Amino acid sequence: KNCDASPSITPQPSSPPSYCPELTSDDGCSVCGEGKTVGNATALFSFPGSPDVRCGVLEQTGLAGAISVNQCNVLPALIEVCECKNCDASPSITPQPSSPPSYCPELTSDDGCSVCGEGKTVGNATALFSFPGSPDVRCGVLEQTGLAGAISVNQCNVLPALIEVCECKNCDASP
Image (tube, rainbow, N blue to C red):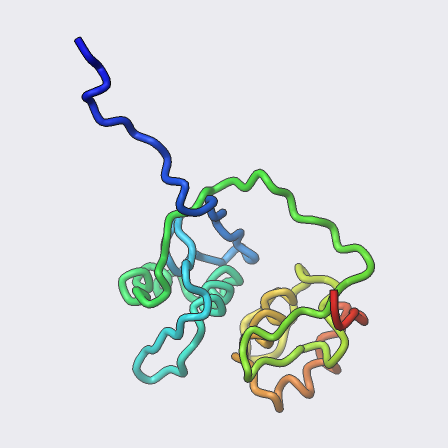
């Protein structure tokens, strides 16, 4: 009997596995649902009565715990534009320790800004920034939110004086 006639299952080599983003807060959640991640971080999610937000910023905001669990539970059905996709729960790559020289992060939007100020970057991405009336946010998430253009230029201009906990440091303009 010839066994070659049965279909074989092979992994699809189309793209390397993407790893599930880690929660940056005990209250954090994945806006795509458990075991999924945003596939199109630059896509704009629109919801009536709310400002448009890039999917990557929405994901980081959820991971940081700034979106309620109830809202997170309904978002997967609403954010088709974000192209949620399956992800691997445990990455085999460990994050690299921050070591000099550190390069300035690139703006991911024309409206983006550096929350630490020009020529500076967050030195402690896991530190929690607290501001009265706003949810606590990890400094790394705050920086990514600024780079993505979700923080106004006026707010960006005053943030360096407020985010001492983020340990802003000088960075090199080009790698």
